[in-house]
Image: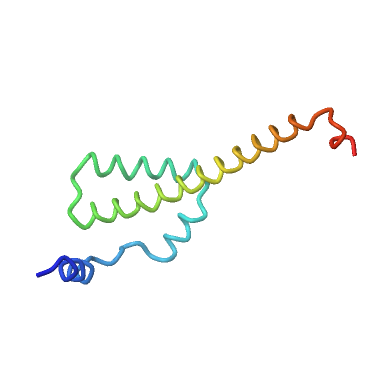
Length: 102
């Protein structure tokens, strides 16, 4: 059996996500702080234990979606900060020059 067959079989038997479209949409609209707080709750639920396999997988999927949302928001903020710093550096480079006075 080749790796390709193994990968295909694994993909075919992988469980479908337990998150509904509505849950995904709610997560996609969450502000950073809420996503972070809910991610902490999901991690704590997994660390505490006492969940059956299905509950653990659900918490894992929720955590993954929340982590992706939070990281995406952090990436957006980082990009804005980087752009602001670049703009500031460009403005300082032209401060007091003739091109700045035009």
